Length: 109
View 1 (cartoon, one colour):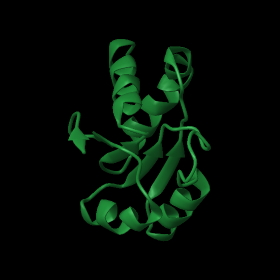
View 2 (tube, helix red, strand yellow):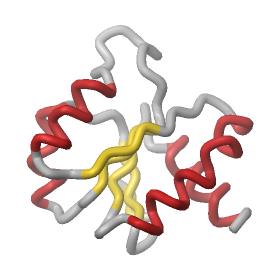
View 3 (spheres, one colour):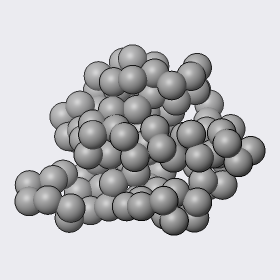
């Protein structure tokens, strides 16, 4: 995990089994910035979302694969972060796309 600021922490791919630890760490939103089906065996967003919602966490699916995608979802990213009741836990394959999205949203605020 990498804490980017008081509201956003990014991480590599998670599984549904990680949700209890994410909730226990105080996060209130789980955000996925990775499209489904990028590689075999990748947990689906539906599975992660179901586990997160069952644990009482808000969820957001903002998949991105490139810079254009980052610009397309940055306003929604900002809205989710700004309206979150607490810290946002964002993940993708390695955490890098989440950080790029965060930086894009910061630079274009």
